[in-house]
Image 1 (cartoon, rainbow, N blue to C red):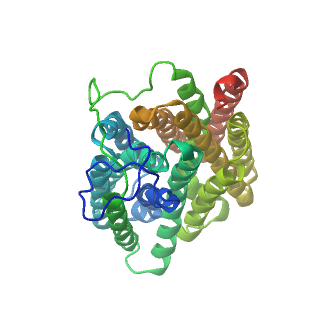
Image 2 (cartoon, helix red, strand yellow):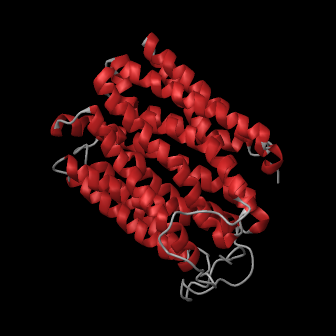
Image 3 (cartoon, rainbow, N blue to C red):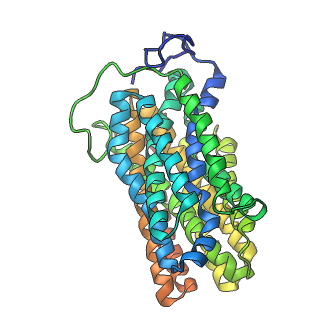
Length: 413
């Protein structure tokens, strides 16, 4: 996309016209990240509420992880087209329908009569999130422009993890303190999505000058010569986001077993703390070399899994919380390292598709492994299943570390 230099468009002009040359104010870079945050608030807002739906609809831990996996299915399906569509039609043309789908998912969640409705709502949520991680994050980079790429990558990454953390905390608090615990949070989220819709309408991004070539629906990829950067980014991002996905899907069950509590506020607060850590650590390390950031991601994920094993075998709630915080560290650093690598290496006309490819590589294991653990826990117990999962991620993190050390020259600016 050519909108790498943009300023706030004339309010009387059509929002689809190409933005005149010139840099947007810095505050617009921050504001451009808001639609990503708003959609990601929905991505995990249901997490503390599953115990209520499980009580009302009577489904197992395995079914719970399948509900969670419908989100991954929707997200991956969205990524097959949203990145290409965003690069060809423009960020706005993808983000506005995504926000409408997210609002529809909220309505379905709020009125869900059975587990099938939850699956549909999660599917629509995944589609909206797929658009956010491709078109939304690329829009932040577009508004930042080539001279502010590091800030654009940082804010795009932080918008994702901050929204992912705010959602479960908001849901936990409102479901414990406000009437209609499975309704109120989604009404609040619709209001947030409405403000994001207005933001996208006013966002200073231009329409593409080229519609590109090739199929609209395809497995997203990167230009020739950039496959190594993509593979290295996925190598550290995938274990980190898989670790946080596990905490989101089965963390409440582990808390219930370790603390004997079904408090939705505690479950939401743990998820919020995990993603707040993922946000804060990115700001803390933004000046470090990219290889150091990516190595720290792999180490953080491995430590998270080692601590998780300790938590389930020692029945330690503090160790579980520590594991969640370390998992957030692993995802945050892996996400920042991978996105900054792609932002540096990929031209704007292919950036949304590259973001989509990056997230496909991360979300496939993030969907498959927690679902496997959910069903395995029904068969052999949550402790044994969790240990198996943790050892698998430790092995993946170790492999990522080896790849980073062998390919350090490819990671430098």
